[in-house]
Structure formats: structure tokens, C-alpha cells
Length: 242
Image 1 (cartoon, rainbow, N blue to C red):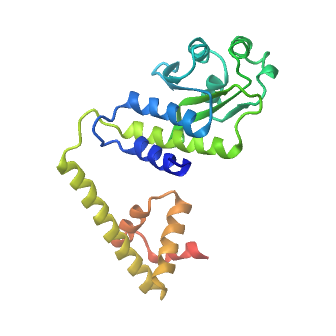
Image 2: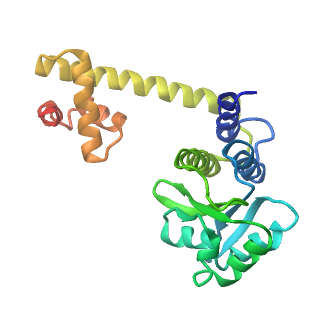
Image 3: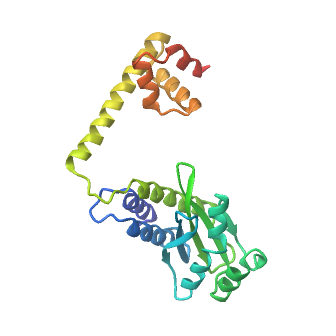
């Protein structure tokens, strides 16, 4: 299987919350496994915040020396710092982080690790945990692989918050499909209104819808609904093209 095929399979597996057997624990195990098999980390751990603000280890893909090291990160280390700052942490040479993480750095070097990264596990700008990637080499991962790992983490986090313990019923699926169809119809109506009002091509009218929605932090369908209901003036939306 090529890397592209692995990626396609990974993203589908992480996002299909309606699949039989989908489970949040399995989901995070998959995330850790993909970060090893596809991204190239040697050990990966996923930590999530509890209601008290502590970090709990949810999954780990590690060799024999990794268990204690992963547990240390709930108190200090790149994963903890990443969660607190909501920003990625890169320690491409762990031997230079002894002052910052004395216990973690010592354990990591003893276990044979030379570098570490931590990426935020986030949903809608809210950080709910972190993903730590440990490597035996001191150089760390290339930027492209880190972006890939972040993308995998983002997909997993979104799937996690959309997971329901109750299996989806056929009627539930049909309801979601029909809602999407109805939303598309509303957007097309709003697009036609803008095109007529501004004497524009449909594609240009859609650009106005997208520009206005983006600049105001609105969903496209919300803007379209406001236009159709006459609670939003077409001229205001068209002004976003200026």
C-alpha cells in the first residue's frame, strides 16, 4: 500500500463516526498508530484533559521503555506544555531541555529518545489535549510530516466530539442528508437573489456570499437564510466584493 493509500484509509477510519464498532478509545489508538506507521514517529501518546484540568493518557503506541515516560508527561514534558500553551512544541534535541523538563528529559534520553514534538488536540479553537511524538533520532520530524500529524489529530478530535454512544438510525442519517439538501437549495436561492440584485454572474454572486460570511464569521447557510427571509439586505452582502 502506498503512503497516499495509507493516508486515505487513515482519514476515513478516523472520521467515520457512524461505522460499526466506532469507539473513542479505538479512535485514539488509531491516531497514535497512524502517527507511527505513516508520519514516522517511534512512540506516540495521546493525552486528554479531564474536567479538573488534569491530563490523562488515553492511548500510547510505545516500545517497552515508553510507558513510564508517557506517564511523566501528564506532569511535565512537551505534551503538558503543548496543552497549556495551545501551541505545538518542538524539542529537536532533548539533551538541551534538561532545565525545562528535568525528569522527562532524563527518562527520554535513558530510553533512547533524541527528539520530541507535541501537537494540540483541538476542536473549534478549543484545546482538549495533546499528541506527543517521540523519536530516537535527534533531528525531529520534517515540517511536512508535522503538518500531516496535526491534520490527523484535528480529524480525530472532531470525530471524537461528534461520537455518540447510541448507534445511528437510518432515519437519523436520512434527516442529515435532507438537511444538507435543504441548505443547498437555500444557498442557491440566495445566490440567485444576489445575482439579480447586482446584475452579476452566479459565480460572482457566490463569491459575495462567501466573502460576506467569512468576514462576519457567519456560516454560508446562515447568510443565505437571512437573505431569503429578507432580514439581510443584498446590498450589504454585495459590498463584501468591494
